[in-house]
Image (cartoon, rainbow, N blue to C red; front, side):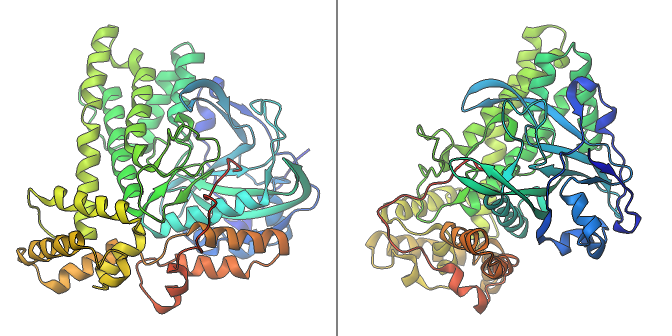
Length: 491
């Protein structure tokens, strides 16, 4: 049995509001203890932000908490129930290998979920072992922290602990537990579960709770639940635009992987594009390209439609009226996304004002990049520093013509060239977590116990807009290979 133990000096400050919702939405459960927990990676900067004592959490007692062997005072562990459209097919789901320890209140008053991922089986495990492997947990640590540094809303990674126990997938692997920090773990799938499995009380309670927790300042007007759909749509439009602007491919945009808070959640088969191509898919199981890079905005809209379906009983007592209200609200998503994306692309090209032909200028560049298989990140970095030879398109007549148009467009704005350059520097990262660099770091850590490669990578990724010399080696592309890069749903 997991030991309940108070570690006052660690600074935990739990207040578990989700545990006060109808109990159909979760199952109370303690983590399953592990044999020999050992700290693999700890995020001291995040701990400081959370108001936690890093030294205490890295002690033997602190690691016991991060491994699920001890439950700190005030925590109320539970596994959340949810559903999800997985690759378009509806399934009843839940936290099959994760437990919400509780909600920690930070010194600034923010409420964040503290979740252990890989903490043992739950009633939702569906014959799974409830455990996780070290490689995927380190992968989520790297990518989530890189996303945070890029300025993209995301869950964060506080720690990775090895368990001293094997997990069995295709082969025997090292077991590990990730401590994940999130604004919440309320998903589109949580609402789908409440709508499908409850009696109406759960759905209304969940909707009221989500409004209070994430959208307390929303203008609810006469229909608070329509306001909820509106606010979630706004955040998703902004989030997906930010993904597209840095070339991030989530890889598994099931409805259970869309957080209503507007954070990126669940780093399974995710990756970043090298050569620009909207059809890019990395996931080994996405054979139809449902979640390809270019499809992400439309999939987000599809997921929001599933949220709207779950909310219909709350939107209006007459179903036809409810559908009309939902459709009218959802019709704004494409415009919202396009506005955020276009604004971000203008910034990437140093455009500080708006002209009607900007979108065509941007699309012409992207089409050329696709044709020439130009690297997405490095092309915009090369434009930032006027190193046209590094775009891979500099000798092309169509690129020369495009460059003239772009220079003329920048010349028409009142702002200075210096201001335009600074905007580009702050909008175009020098480094992203290149897939081959991530794999290199994981191989060293998992196979050899060498975390120095991962440490150097994390250091370079921590300030992606710095454009410093230390980042140069992380800008290079992988060696040409006949094999396509593949990712797997290991997290």
